[in-house]
Image 1 (tube, rainbow, N blue to C red):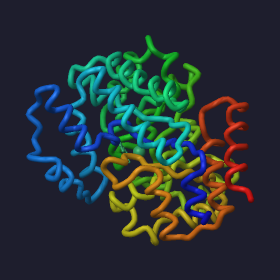
Image 2: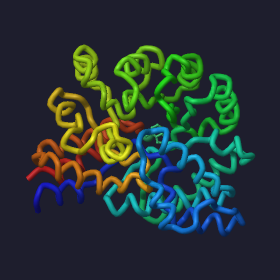
Image 3: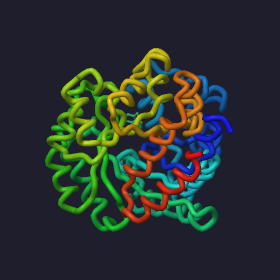
Length: 335
Ligand code: HPA
Ligand code: ZN
């Protein structure tokens, strides 16, 4: 089996995927019809043609608009199950999934509707295929601290079912420091926290996420490499970075895959994981990201073993579970 096939067929975890970003045009149209929504796109092809982004904000505008078709518990369950079914084809056995409750509560959808729906889809994937999932609640950073506290308040009755907290949406002009107090409260609740940083924003935002938010992982972090001291720190502390290669190309963070900072990050000894981010919008699920990376960089078997091991090392699960999964990676990736 060649290196690519070995990487594709290996059991793996996905740690950076937004459930709203897994909404395929086909499902969006089906849900619009089911919910009697006048969807502002003429056809599936018309919607797909709109997936031509110039930066993060141009994507987010469409991403939030499409989320409007998600109304009922059944919708969220269908969305979750469709993602997990597709992820399983890439041999994902564990997924830590972001959701954006503020996108939905702002439209009058109850937090409980969102959570119960997502959990119902995940329960089917667990029962049918043994897939493991975690839910990470993301605060929208373009909204205020007060709004984030209100979202946290909505989540409190269900805190046992929320496995972590994150920070996403428009990065530029919305530094992690804006949410220092919210994240302190999340940590007091005993939950790990993560944040998108250094995707479009400067390396200084990664430093803030580490020092002020005290994150366990950095989402994206591909601009870390611009700062030598930060890169050395990330390597020393082995902070995991959830890199999403196709996302970075589609949102013009890098012009083409050959120019991506991924090889430099790996050479610098950073704990890098590969992920799909918003696979319905960015041209591919985790397997496609792996194919695109291998097409550009032709990594050897040892590098792929490290990348795939990192996906489990950085996961929010207990040590015994981690060891079991790491042994599965080794059995698959070692001759
Ligand atoms: N960056 C920030 N926010 C997001 C993203 C992203 O790549 N995807 C969905 N929300
Ligand atoms: Zn993301």
